[in-house]
Length: 247
Image 1 (cartoon, rainbow, N blue to C red):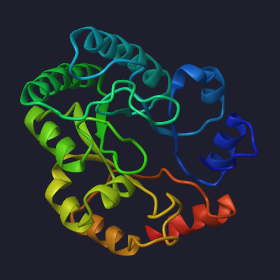
Image 2 (image 1 turned 30 degrees about the vertical axis):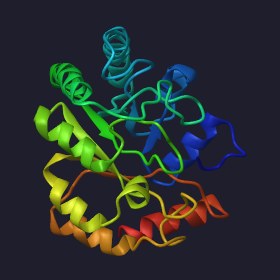
Image 3 (image 1 turned 180 degrees about the vertical axis):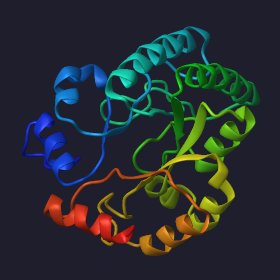
Image 4 (image 1 turned 60 degrees about the vertical axis):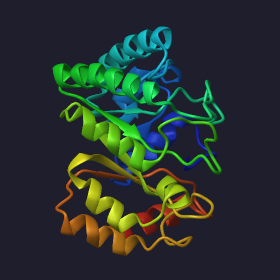
């Protein structure tokens, strides 16, 4: 989402030279050998190719692609593999949108996540279930709110499954971010940030990210904080603002 004028591999190299870790989305579209050769530290990657949490045929696809993703994560020495409530298209829209999530779907999703968590435990990797907003970016996505991901991760209760708590999405969908962090802290595997509105760097919008950083320090959070956002203008300025907000 940064240095968009450069080829992808050059973006990775630029971030690495600046001292940042790197996260990637669809690994099937990347040259893994080239990524390894950059020397970058990969902190998270997409943990599946297709499938969802609730349909038997799609679950099988999800589990199979999660196993393939683990193999790539091992090559990249990447500790975390990201998940969503359902598969997303290239535009971020759910492949199988759902307007109403039933109790049966909740139970099926928990059952599927138990299987994914076991894969994570066996491979010494962590799957992270990310919350999304349905108002702007991802309408029709099931299990989208942070409260939903928290409920599922808490129910599975495994070291192989944590929350990817995306504060940009949570601000749009739920708000009350500091209390959300405090309530979720033992289940958080990663924090993702961008400001609202616009999904740009901290300081460009309404979220008080220095206060968020203080809260993370108070709860002794020692995991990854990742900026999943665009630059308002210059990517270097945006990255410096991100770094300053959490220093």
